[in-house]
Image 1 (cartoon, rainbow, N blue to C red):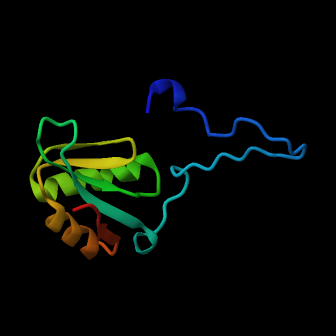
Image 2: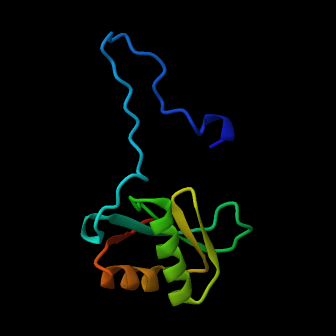
Length: 113
């Protein structure tokens, strides 16, 4: 997504005179791990053929996502980053991440092939 569209919420026009625009953000409250539905997938697109494991679907503050990302990077012993609501780890660590997140009581699904 380009930078010019990041702050728009998708509503262009409403004919309802009593319309109240409510912006729902995923960074407001933290769901407990048992209610989180995380997806773990492998991505190679636009990365010069290098594999990256992505963890998506986290609902909560960005700070908690960064803590979870740091924990996963430490347990897997690899580099990575947290940005745009996703955790990216260098390499293929899908099985290991699924085991780690399952032991932390997150609902985890492997997405993609």
